[in-house]
Length: 167
Image (cartoon, rainbow, N blue to C red; front, side, top):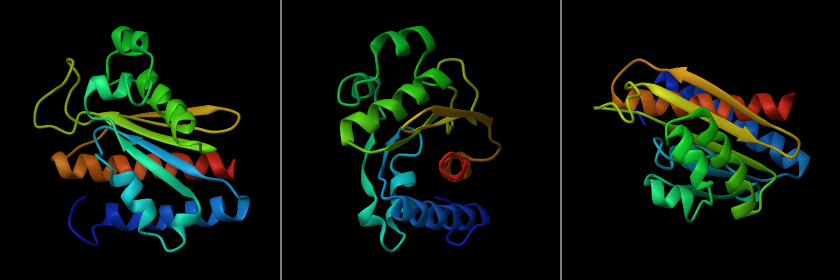
């Protein structure tokens, strides 16, 4: 992520602790499907003591064919909306629940830089959380360099999961 102990990292770690405690109390599990964050959401979760009871695993689906193949994101979603889209993030979160057998799926996709992707500006980020009854998404435009965007995306994804669990 960014510098050890950075505010973004500290927030993400705090939220991850809350999420792991809540999932443990509820007897539920989570899986991650990550593109721009490259496994950082899952890594942040598993850094919490006791996470092994609730984290099923994570898939880093950086390449489009991994998203549509291994992760089973419908090809029509990617062809219609692109890989950097709300719909793709939602499909990733929903698919990883099924692929890894978890109650909750968390997904990230976006553009960390240095160049735009699919005509989307650097800092464009889409996060999604799929649960037993609904899928939530959040779209962001994040400032900063590559590592700052990625760190902020991790925090945004974990906050969205916390909100879904709490509400």
